[in-house]
Each structure stands twice: as structure tokens, then as C-alpha cells.
Amino acid sequence: ERVFAEVADLWDGQLDLLVHSVAFAAAEDLEGRFTDTPRDRFWLAVDISAYSLVAAARAAEPLMAAAGGGSIVTMTYLGGVRAVPHYNVMGVAKATLDASMRYLAWDLGQKQIRVNAISAGPVRTLAARSIAGFTTMEEMFEQRAPLHRHIDAGDCGAAAAYLLSDDAKNVSGTMLYVDAGYHAMGM
Image 1 (cartoon, rainbow, N blue to C red):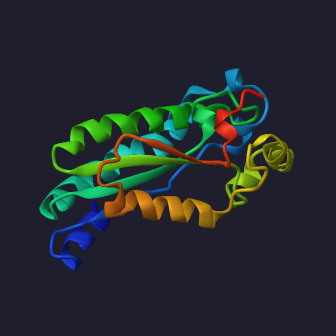
Image 2 (image 1 turned 180 degrees about the vertical axis):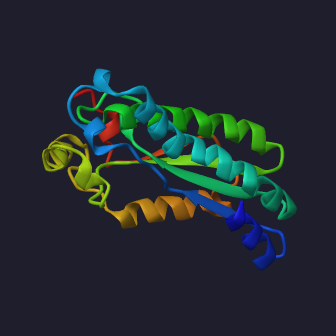
């Protein structure tokens, strides 16, 4: 609430865009069995990784409406659509995030606020280091993705720039895969 109040003061009560890139799960819940995830850490992952988008969108809505519309982009991953070994509770949190993005697109669309998601392939980040077997995942990804290459933060940035721009004025409720085509493959 404080951040959005400061944004409103700084930019005359208006906001054009918001990038949501928040996620968390306890490290011990990204290894072993998903079944062993305790309830409190299950809800912690969902709250931080998915509900934070809902809360941020709610706070951004009046500022974007005052600007005549806006664009919200969140970061997700294929583990919310398919079971990915060692992604566990984060996959469930991303599935919740994905559905939240679509419902927010519906709710906010009447105010010309677009809500979309970028589903990136494996990108070397601090968070990725906590996923057991990440380097093996990168190797398999490069072998199996139709374009046979890695994804980097610049690829995600370019996709976000598109979704946040007026070039995507008719794109909402969409998950844009930035994964060299990996999501389209069966094996």
C-alpha cells in the first residue's frame, strides 16, 4: 500500500505498467516429494507467488484507470501447467498465478487494463539455483526445444517490453511462452 501511495504521489495518481516478478517457496519443498509439503509452507508459497499479483493488481487498478488503462505482466513457468520434477509446490503456486492472471484480465479489462504472463524457459537466476538439478534441466531444454538454445533475461525483457507496449493493445489474459518452443514438445 505504501509503494502504490508513493507511486500515486510521484506520478500524479497514474500508473501505466506493472511487472510482477515475485515468487518464493521453502528450499526444502523444492526437493523430495510434493506430497510431503506441509500446509503452512504450501500456503506460504501460494500467498507470496500468486496472491501477491492479485494484491498488486488491486492497488494498481485505480492508478491505471486514471491513466486510461495499463498493462500488468507477471512471470510464470511451465511447471504451473505440467509436473516438473523438483518444482513441487512452486508448480502449484504458478498454476494459481496463471489462473489469477486470467481472472484479473477479465476483471480489469473493462478499465482497459491488460494482464498477461511470460512463461520463460530455464533462466540462470538466483532463484533457479535453488532448484535441484537445474543444470540438467538446462541441458535437456537445449536438446529438446525446437530452437535448441538457452533463454536469458534479455529474451524475457524483450517479451515484457512487447506485452507492456501499445503494440500489444489487444493482448490480454495470455501466457506468452519464451522458451525456444520447448512448451510445444511432448518429450
